[in-house]
Amino acid sequence: MEKIDTPVVFYRGIFKRSASTADAVFMITGMTIGAGILGLPYTVAKVGLAIGLLYIVLLGLIMLTLNLMIGDVAVRAGEPLQLPGLAGKYLGRWPKFILSLTLILTSVGVLLAYLIGEGDSLAALFGGNSLMWTVVFWLAGSLLIWGGLQRVRVAEKILGFLVIVAIVILSLVLLPRFNPVNLYYLNAADLFLPFGVILFALHATPAIGEAHALVASPKHFRRAVIIGTLIPITVYCLFALSVVGWQGLSTTPVVTIGLGEQFGAVAGIVANLFAVIAMGTCFMGYGTALREILVWDHHWPEALAILFVILVPLALYLVGWRNFITILDWVGSFFIALIAIIMAAVYVVARRSSSSREKVHTWLAALPVFVFFGILMAYSIYTLVLH
Image (cartoon, rainbow, N blue to C red; front, side):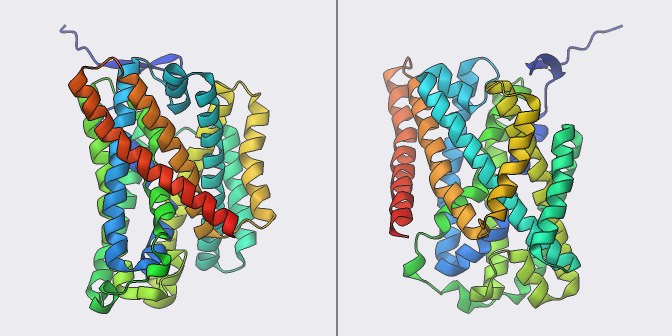
C-alpha cells in the first residue's frame, strides 16, 4: 500500500496535521472581524465617508505591511513563537516583557469592548437594560473560558465564512438606499478620530503567529497572511460605504442598534444576531488566548489566570468604563501602535544579517511603520493629557 506523507507541525507539545491556506486565512479573518466593525461606521460618519474609506484602505495597507513583517520574522525564527517570544528571541528580555504586558492590556481592552457591545446588542434584541445582558453574557462566556473551549479549525472556517457572508448581504441590502450627499460630508475637527477604531478593527497580529505555527509551507503561510488581511479591508469598505452612505450622521456608535431602529425589526434582529455571534466567538477566542499567555508564557497558576481573564474586564465595566468608541480608540491608537513599533524593531533586527539590498528593503518597509505608529502614540498621549 502506498504511503501518503501528510505535512505535520509541532504545536504546543504535540504533533498536528498542517493547516491549509484556507484554514489560516479564516484564522486571521476570524480574529480580525469582531467588535471593531460595529464602531467603524460611526467614526467614518463623524469624519466623512470619503475620508473614512481612504483611511480604511491606507491603514489596511499599513497593517498588511506589519502582518507580512511579523510573518517574515516568524518564518526566520524557525520555531513556533508568539509575538513576545519573537521579541525575546531578537531583542531580549525587556522588550519581551513590555510586549507581553502590552498584549495583556490589549486583550483586556478587547474583552471589555466585547462586554460593552454584547450588552448593547442583546438589549436591542431581547429588551431590558445593557447592564443585565452584559452580566448574563459574561457568566456564559466565563463558564466556557473556564472550561477551556477549543474551537476546531472546521468550525472556525464555517463561522468566519458565515460572518463575512452576513456582512456582505447586509451591505448589499443597504446600498440601494445610498444618499450621494453623505459622500461629500467632511468634518475636519474629527480628522483623526477614526484612526484608533479602524486599527482596532484591522488588528489581528496575534493570529499571525498562530497561523505560522500551524502552516508548514512558508509560501502558503505568506499567501494566507495577504488574503487574510485583504478580506477584512474589503469587507469594511463595503460595510462602511453602505451604512454611512445611507445613515450619514445618524449612524450610531454600535451600528447594529441603529440599523434596527431605522431599517425595521427584521433587519435589527439579523444585524444584532450577527453582532452577538461574532463578538461572542471572539470573546471566547481572546479570553482563551489570554489565559494561555498567562499560563504558558508567564507560568501563572491555571485558576489565577482564569480569574484574571474573567474578572478584570467585568470589574472595569462595573466601575464605569462603558464608552464603546473610547475603548476601541484607545486600544487601537495606543496599545496596538506600541505592538507595531516593537514588532517593526524585531523585523529590523531579525534581518540584520541580510544583504545590503535586502537591508534597504527592510528599512523601506519598517520606517513608515515606525513613523506612523510613533506619531499615533504621541497623539494618543497628547489627547489623554488634554482630557
